[in-house]
Length: 294
Image (tube, rainbow, N blue to C red):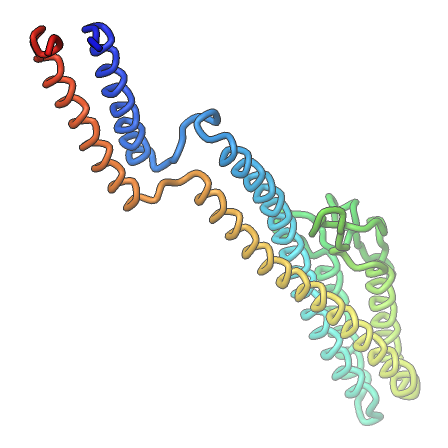
């Protein structure tokens, strides 16, 4: 059977084209580091990669929420730690004031120091976070929520929760419920201690003020424990998120990225195949008419 020259040319051309496409494809993979440039080249890997990217983006948003929660709770913990220091100092002043040996001047000095602690307490109650928000103001956190006048602490925030989505459909309250009344109560009890010291009322200091301060200390300790528990939960979730995000990143790389060592081997193979196809075509196209008549 005779083979026509057009058929022979088309056969050689197809062989060269196929080898060339494979060769150039590997070249692009090596230069871009990607297995494919369009979804049509590998629909399955494209779909899997899109799914992995969607999930990774979702967990990255959770991670962002957790970082915000961690910062918010961290500011709360720092403020409450300082409140603990205020309470401890107030306790020391009350113990000194419970002594009947102090004179009027010393008693007034102790009362003045309690006044300074009240001022510090107000500043701590108006603690601001990293974004300038007032940590203990609820959702109405654009302005300072606490102000003191006439020995009374007033709250102008709200009791609404600040929530962070930490999992799909799962939320955590990152502010402390009832903290507004806690600060108001602390301030009022320090005000009573200040009055008792000014009046040198040793009995009231011993039976009332010291008990009040113990109650404040217990309350602050409980609040710090609550914040600490939430911080531990946030850190645990952050660690888990990091693992999940790393897993999705690896999956995406597996779907999209080229194994360079494998690509280099395939590059050498396709280069050889391309050169061989051209060589075969060159030799074939040099056949004479007599070669086809044999």
